Image (cartoon, rainbow, N blue to C red; front, side, top):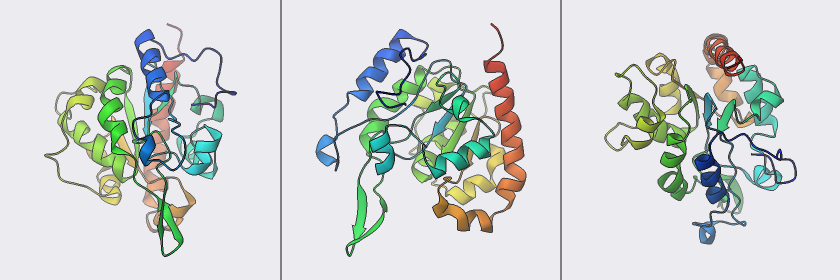
Length: 240
């Protein structure tokens, strides 16, 4: 989502119902008492989007900017996807729906910052199923981080046998019965979920060591992912 000053005057959400839901989400104050800063839900969505980016939660810089992935992580992510900034921030092409919509705060131990707190659980419990049900065109989910894995992989597994990607089925299936899987394990098993879903390491510079230890991600997976995204974007922009 663009900040209020930079957001296009007419955001192509694609349906009145989704537009109304996004207004409700952006006005959400459910967990304000647990947040270190004023609630500021940040997401991007459209009923026309074909690709969903499911991350963790906004960091403090994103909170102040109001724009997801407008940093070094975003530059790397766009390079991984081989898309322009304009394409990335077009909600008719990409939906950006993190597990938590607001900055959750920072973990501190012995006076030192140890990274951000987990996404607030209220977001997924209150909003995610409703959002996914209103984005019926999603054909590929990019899953970034453990909390997004825990939410999205069980739903992908639940519909893996029906031969169709159905966002409403993803929204209502239950993850509790599924075994927890790590980021590395999910990436190693990427073909099990392809072409509907792929797990990716977070593009943060903090993961440089992981990328060095797993060169096959950039060497083998990214070309396949880039080809899939190029096909989806081409079909999204074809005249109806």
